[in-house]
Image 1 (tube, helix red, strand yellow):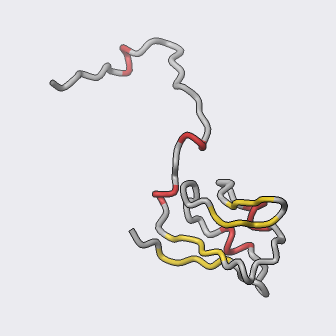
Image 2 (image 1 turned 60 degrees about the horizontal axis):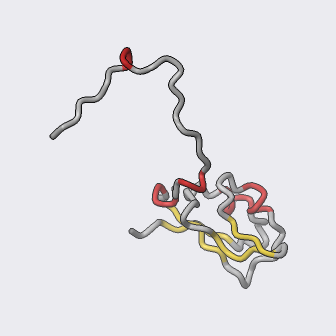
Length: 96
């Protein structure tokens, strides 16, 4: 049985949706390109960690450990900001 939805005029005034954080919403499946981190090349400068808008760069004890693909949207900022002489992060097409 299909439930009828209320129109906007029937909603109570001051309605507020429950707030949340990005930890509750895994956004990695939005990605079309995927960053690949090369541990051998990485100098752990943490520039990728600073610029990542999704906090998807995993850092432990001051060193990059990888990329959290549950939250990485594949924007490529990490790969773009990785120093050109190092290029420890490259973007590849996401395979589903």
